[in-house]
Length: 289
Image 1: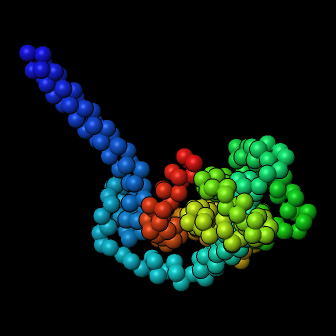
Image 2 (image 1 turned 90 degrees about the vertical axis):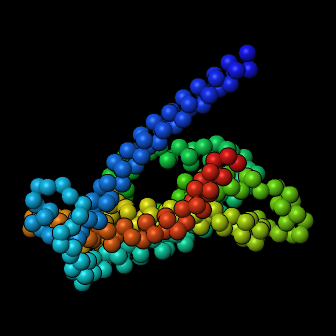
Image 3 (image 1 turned 180 degrees about the vertical axis):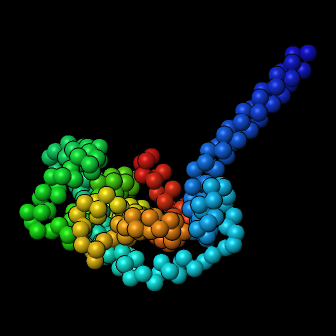
């Protein structure tokens, strides 16, 4: 008799769990739709006519489908120049900044020196300082150095490393046995040679993942270029799109603005979807080590 009651109660619990799971699924699905809809609408708008956009009717199906705005955007020298300027910032920052970040992570993870933990905590504390707090002092400093209206304020600070990358790489290196350090010392390797020949190859996967995330941040950066760059020839891609918004919105040419935004989004979206699994695994592993 008791076994029948237990079976009935287990079935009831199982039914409640299924109902609860379905409720959670529906809520998550609705949340996903709400989050993805602006992206879908932006892409759809880039193919719409001006009359359809201004009709006041919410639709995501262009009628007719126009693709001419994409070629029109790509023919604009200002847009192409913005892409090259963004690459001029991203490439040296990723190469030099990635190296200095990995070197700092190695020092915090494997080297022993007085005040290491306090220094690392102080470095992490800088993450909590928003850019809005330091942008005016930075602007004053870069103006005195004569760097404003050039790409140097966007390149030079990044070459000294990224705190988030240092943290994740340090977590990755902590999971590597310290015996490798001792073995390298016995073979006569110094710290730099040990880092370059032993630990750098071991963390190249985690480093590549973090550099991809950093590239996305550089590519989509809007506030810093807006503050430091005045000349049109130095504008990065996001500033160029802002100028499109200021100029073409008056003409109600929203399709061109959306087409420029879609093109600017393609590199970061492609990187994320291609390396999505690697990015998620790297963050998860860095968090548990």
